[in-house]
Length: 147
View: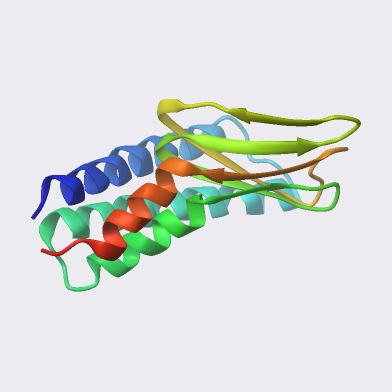
């Protein structure tokens, strides 16, 4: 296995574990109602999926690269509109985003180690569109990697 694939696997395992523990900790602090509970459970499931995909990639499982590509692809878009928002990352992130409001602003940031999950049907007053550049780069590594 190449060094790049090992790095992808380690980021997915560590980030998935970090997200899983964070989600379970939030659940242990008090069970939210309705939609908030559904979003929290979905976040825990996504973190578990990233963790499992990372372990399979590290072990060289048959479907590991495909599952890891799905994990990375889900982390690429960053979307926030007044009606809907989506942003998810595990392990690390390097988001490039453009915020549309009275003024159009662009920004880039990074965070490692980290995990983040935002899914809602209320995204805020402005529109924000972005790309997680790290997830995009890792998806490309997985797409074009040769074992």
